[in-house]
Image 1 (cartoon, rainbow, N blue to C red):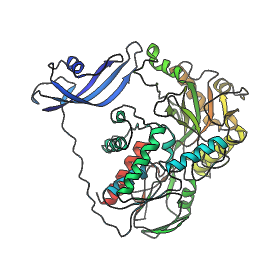
Image 2 (cartoon, helix red, strand yellow):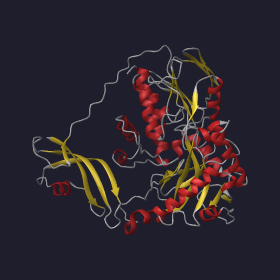
Image 3 (cartoon, one colour):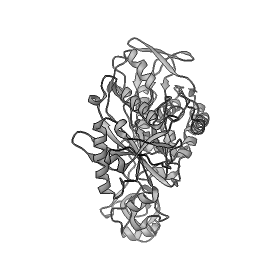
Length: 515
């Protein structure tokens, strides 16, 4: 039996992919495809009168591997992966700070290879965390230690579970396989833009944790890092529940761990400011987005709710769409009291009435001033709380008013749980942000007519796009001048999303094992 890979199989949205269709499309002999596995699926909607699926797959065939195949067909051989071995030994179990994607996969891989790692996570397990988030949404009482940012699964748990990434690392396949094994849908293995959905992702991260505990891992919830004991080597960590000895400490902190960033600075652990982006959330009816992307095919049962990605390159900075959530909602994502932070969330079905996306503008070290990126974020979030009128309402401005530079006074129904208050975003953002945001929105409106129509709402503030700092590490993944300290994942400045953070967690685990 010969394995072949077949690329660029085009399939009309009204048809089904079968062995017979593949044989006819590729002009292979009838009956030669014995079975097949989809490895990639995407939608080509560039021509609205000819929307179709594009598949790549691996098939078993009884044809000779020496046969002359068409250009889009090649004989498939399994990629070779390096052999990972647990080489290094330690006197004390490795400690990981943070149980987001980087921490989850680091924790799993080290437990798998017999290292009995310990996780310290300031937040709660996902069930208790969900209850705290619901209490916040229902009562407006925020738990600073257990919220949309902190707790089992990290910030990604209460988003969309997006698994798109631009990194070309073979470990991405391992991440997807593990997520699928513990409950994620099978289509994440081949979809061009895979996502899990918040409702399912919460179950997946719990299942991975339970298996990791069976493998010898230990997780300490409600345990906050308060200090690190080190000279040239890491010796122990101080937590709100006491001191723990360690030879290896992995900082898989999230992008919102501001008190931890402050502790690191006071401990002379070297980090630097990095660029990120801030802006607003824009919300449209999902049907509008479907029509803009699919035309008359919008609503076809074979097509998922439509997405978009938009980018505008200005003279000094960029404006782009971020974390687009089809059929989702805008969620309050504060981790500090009396601040407003917005983010997007979708469940697996993505069947909500509205779509939303961050529309954000890049900011860099020269924009932050003395307080750095952390204080820059915090001041925006505090001002958003003030402009919203308190009680975690979010400020909003209609696009027409934003362009005309006048305060919005209309009432608005939105998916944001606490409601919104009309505002003037010139009172929220510096002029360099509002100008680039306006230029970007006008550009996007030319790409998708009506995208920035006069009655389209902008809701603020989207401020947690990525970490505002990077903890400097060397090629061995260890922090500058400190043996045994490993900055890791998005919060440390080395990832941007679930996939890249998970991959970074695996890479750090491999280094610690001596590979």
